[in-house]
Image (cartoon, rainbow, N blue to C red; front, side):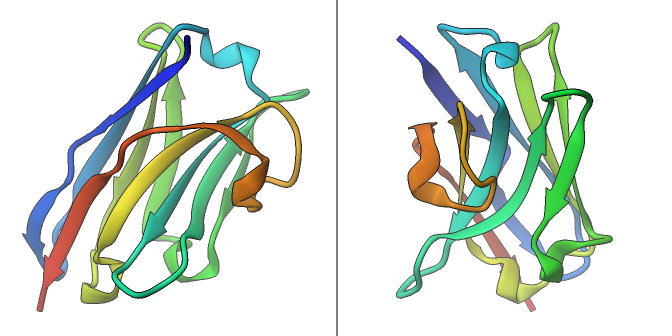
Length: 125
């Protein structure tokens, strides 16, 4: 059984940094084609944030508003994916979810097979 557990969220001020972790169990990261991070703010739909794919080499994808501020990475030895978030803004406030995909478009949430429970990130101005 695959489980994804996020951690690292919290309350920070604008301009601060956070690193989110997503620990996977049940299968190695390499059994998936893509690992992604999504977020959902109150009253809004879940949106794509970042993804890393490794079919034929690692490829990184970012939502436009986080490019240059967020970095997705993985540690195969720890079976963990990270999201380093720098220069945080109040509009980054949301519950952040990691997800694992076997195939499909990296930004299309319904194509992800497994989801974590989410971790809250709150950025105060």
